[in-house]
Image (tube, rainbow, N blue to C red; front, side, top):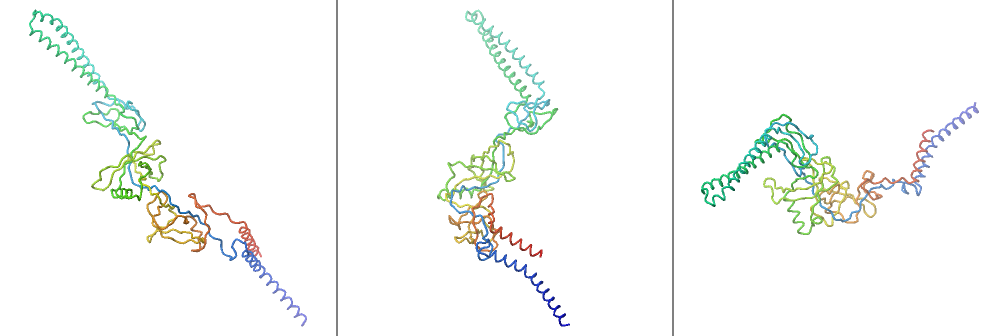
Length: 425
């Protein structure tokens, strides 16, 4: 009996030792992997912490900044011609396609010319009659001239002939004017384009009765190859700008000409810049605004008359300004701040004074010094505030993600393999 009890005890001990071995094997593997990860030269470093976060930075530098002002404006055509009826009559034909380009002198409408053709014929007949009467008067005067010198006829009769000659000359002049008037009216029956440009919709149709007295509108032609953009600027801003230029805080842009950029309603900017034509000398008494006008090329027809746009113009330059991408600046009600990387690689917030937007950048007026590095990208990687970071130059297209070191990749793979093996066991 005692020998049987000893055999059972030995069997139970063997089973217990086997279970303990099975439980300790995964733990030993994990401890070994942890020791391997914490070894010198591994991705986690000697302390076993995560690697420094990689952030994109820009180095602050002073540069000449063209100060841009963005203002709302309206587009208008350089030349606009309203085609109107200049004679009375019924429209027989419309000879253009709505919305097409027309040339100066191109026939647009044909008004019934029959009455004006008849008036011209009548005027020409009266002219021929007057010319015949003038010829007869001239002959009589020439015939009586030697007779009156010889006292063969009375001077009174000769004077009457000379008077009739003058009247015949006047009748001929009046007849010529009547012929010219009749010809003009006949020409007006054929309505032509006064300028080249794009014609809009037809305002009358065939069979419509038009009137010269009411100046019936027929169509509108606009030149859109080059467009005007009219906009206004506060007189306060203009005065502040002039004072800053006078005090040498700013300087006038370039050679005095002001380039104008036009931004469409969808936010796209026209590729070709325009130029500022003039600034009005009078301030609007009701709004306190000064009217300005720019001329903008429009070869592809992107601008349309009456269109709402935004205008960016550089009226002055800041000789030594600092610009930062807008995403680098945090704007709150308490103020504007940026993250500046110190010499030991630790980022720290810095309050700054922000000026106007210059495209997709902010003008920094105060708070930064040339040479300092400001974080622009990679904020989401900074898990621990104040922890050192690894800086890489930032590009407008986005900071590149640094490659994972081979040692870190192999360590990560070993850990995953060990964990998978432990789970399977």
